[in-house]
Image (cartoon, rainbow, N blue to C red; front, side, top):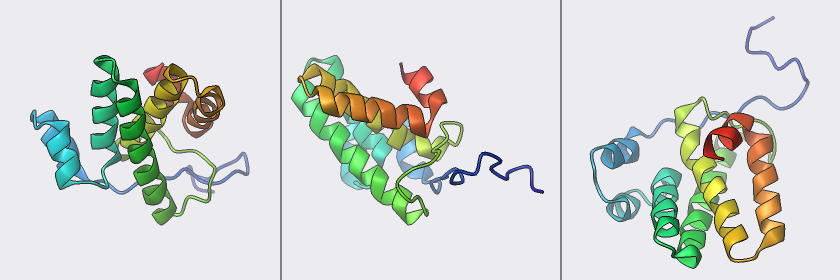
Amino acid sequence: MSIHENLLGGPPPTHLPDDPGPRELLASGTAPVDVAAAHPASSLAWAQLADEAYERGATVESYAYARTGYHRGLDALRRSGWKGHGPVPWEHEPNRGFLRALHALARAAQAIGEQEEYERCSQFLKDSSPTAAQVLG
């Protein structure tokens, strides 16, 4: 038996492929808008844009950025074999862009009064990665 075998019988964790370019650009101080323009499939860049918009009170803008990052992340998850449910571990750094976008979408949905979407996204985050839900708050 492999130490990575899922003993609970659920789907295996999904690990997105690493794409260090956007992460490195953001870490070096490149503006998230420039990173998103150069790497539009990067959930991380969209999540960063969502966070910045939210921090300055632009909740609708934050919602739009977060939704883009969320959908880009869903596309990447599906390409990686995800079947619509199962763990997306925070501990695997390439997953963090999607998880941050999902958190940002829940936060912005709540801020604009979309309670049903807030609850759905919050539960999705907890189901995907309890660690992400705890770290992101």
